[in-house]
Image (cartoon, rainbow, N blue to C red; front, side, top):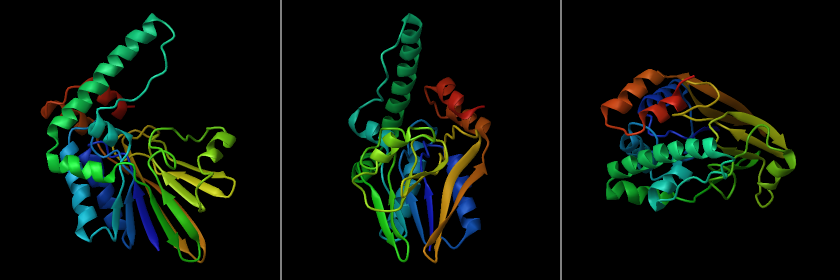
Length: 255
């Protein structure tokens, strides 16, 4: 059984199409999971959202399943990410600039959505995925951590804190996104994987991340893959579509 998982497309159709092409070339994929953050902070929010919706509805969700992420929720509710209190005036000024960039980008993305798009985001909001693999056990999929789309689970998150995220879940393998950094670490009996980001990778810029999981004879082989895309082409697209936070988003895409 082969399971493909990706997350954090962030309206980057160029990177998303590169990942879809890589999946097609790999072949033999039985099930695909998308772990959210589909639309916001990229030049093509609607195109990415509608392509994922079409994939999810093509076979009534049997071979492609999708959940929402925190930025998808922001588009639904008007919420915004929380920041720590700035330590000084310079920090406050930096935060002001960041808040304007984020808010303008989210408002622009909302303006692109139809009510049907909005209804699809509402349908997938707050969801989690789970599958029992014959001979292996349960695999769970979430955006950030089990039960919450906002906290960050990093490679260096203290182990006792990281283990707590899985206390009320049953399984062996947990897969998420959110941090935009690929990860493979053991937390007690749990193996916690982060497949990275399709549209805004933070670990290797210009390399869209996704994961391929092959289950055989009670074991899982994990292939954390990267696919090249052109960040400068995406940045040029931001300007051409009238996206309001070009410099801020360009900084997320460039080295």
